[in-house]
Structures are given as structure tokens and as C-alpha cells.
Length: 126
Image (cartoon, rainbow, N blue to C red; front, side, top):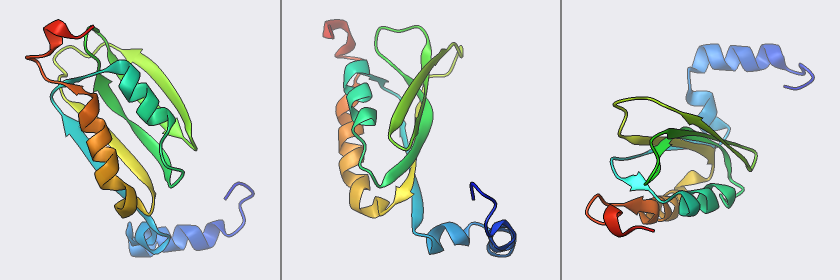
């Protein structure tokens, strides 16, 4: 793709097969959603240590003790965080895209849940 090799073939596959080409190429995705604020340090460790099969992750999350939301982006293992203020946005939403995600999804969901700080524990969170 970088050097336009086979672009016409890629475009044709995308047009004819809709998103089926993603599955044929072995790519899959899953979405994580949560209403609880997250522990920032845990989340940053998580996205910094994603399995190599995860080629892309992105979303918006809310950290405990912060007024701003975090727009995060991971491409080829490189995380990037940007701060945005979106009044009224409470839900965390993240999408993970890659190969062999069925092998990793359950563990990633557990690790994401471990980042959550339920509202009844926020007062004691340091």
C-alpha cells in the first residue's frame, strides 16, 4: 500500500466484499465500553504493553481525578494521549483492531476491567 502496489486490487476487494476483506486478511476488532472512571497509570501500562497482534487501538476514556477526557491512539505499538474536554461524556469507549484477537480479547477485557475504579471506591483512590 505504501508504494501503491496493488492498489486497484485492494480497492476492488473493498468495493465488492464490503468489510469481508478484513476477515479474509485475518483482521478483527472488538469494542470496550464502561461507565467507571479508569486508573490512569494502569491504563497507560495496558496500552503500552498490548499484544503485537493488536495493530490499532483508539478511543476516549475518563480517568479518576481528571476533569478532561483522554483521547488515546495506539498505532503499531506506539501510544499517544491527547486531552479533550467533552462536557456530558461519561462513557469510556475503546476499539481494538488486529489479527488473532479472539486469542487476546478475554485477557484484554479483564485487564481493562482492572483499570476501572467504581464510583464507591473513588474517594479512597490515591
